[in-house]
Amino acid sequence: MAEQRTGAGDTRSEILDVAERLVQRRGFNDMSYADIAAEMGITKAALHYHFPGKAELGESLVTRYAARFQDALRVIAADQADAARQLEAYCAIYVSVLRDKRLCLCGMLAAEYNTLPLSMREAVANFFEENEKWLVDLLSRGRSAGTLTFNDSPEQAARMIVAALEGAMLVSRPYGNTSVIDSVAGQLVSELVPRTGRRRQ
Amino acid sequence: MAEQRTGAGDTRSEILDVAERLVQRRGFNDMSYADIAAEMGITKAALHYHFPGKAELGESLVTRYAARFQDALRVIAADQADAARQLEAYCAIYVSVLRDKRLCLCGMLAAEYNTLPLSMREAVANFFEENEKWLVDLLSRGRSAGTLTFNDSPEQAARMIVAALEGAMLVSRPYGNTSVIDSVAGQLVSELVPRTGRRRQ
DNA sequence: GTCTATAGGCAGATAGAC
DNA sequence: GTCTATCTGCCTATAGAC
Image 1: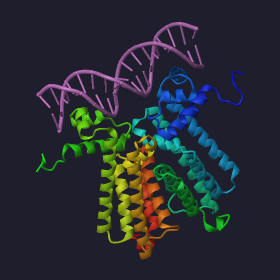
Image 2: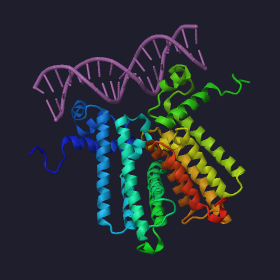
Image 3: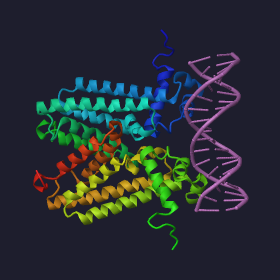
Image 4: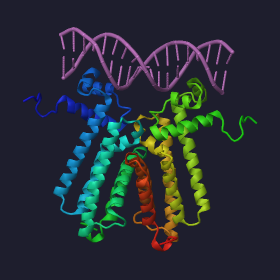
């Protein structure tokens, strides 16, 4: 096998790990090769071997993040029986990201959207598209089963959920705590889950 | 009088106008003195005469924006009789900003929060604080008058509104149109305004 | 108030040795 | 794969003439 260390990823994925955290905390344009290199104890030139340019690094960052997010959504769909608990689990992802002092990677990149290379923009747009698709499916099934209730279409409800969660992460920073995301996640669930469908109350 | 041109602001406020638009579209860290100077047809050195450093420029940007926002809120409170229409007018501010291809200045700066000078962070935090205060007051009055209905506290509802609108602007960029903010603004109003309180339907 | 000129630093990126 | 060394360009900022 070509693996060098047991239990640790290769250099390429370690670069992505470090870069991802830096982007989520500081933004893509305020994350430099020098930052990553310093943290990893290697040189900038070594980074360029793995990712020729910043655009390639950024694109890999988004596609890996989107793939991992989709994996998490599949796990939620498999683990949780009813739609109401799947919605709770979905919101919990956002809460946990913020607790690690990070913004959603694609939420951060959405703010920087106008300055991103085209390949990254497409990957970011794709993330939100897939995200909405999954939510629309969840909402449709929940409505049919009677475990979720909402006005308007599943598409509109899905956009509200994404907007509220992404916005909650965004404004949590100046607030300096997680009260906004906690409150928003709680309100989304309590508004969409009918009283009879809740575990306690 | 010290005014140079009728109907036009002085250089200082013209700098702020240009810088503000650049920040709302590209972000504070991706807006440079060179960008502003080129657009105004003056040199970078002239900018430094009006604003010694970028931190001072940024702080002026936020405090002016926050003051103008408060003015708009006062106009809404004076013009619109009932709370339901004030909420509509509040949402309309966000929609109009996005239609000009801008993000909320403080929403953008919230994304860049970790990289901002301290003076700017405080000004941004203050914007959201004042914003929430105004909404809490609106929601409280609306609930008392019966023109607005919502679960939880006015504070929680206010945070949901801000998060949803800021998030809608954010994700609208990758979506490439205003469908998200339009949908979110519509949903917020229709959820908070009881059917009997609406003008038509 | 605005200019020219320039300093000093950091960005992304490349060449070539090992 | 990782290194040293270097390039070019842009950034914020300053000095001093006009």
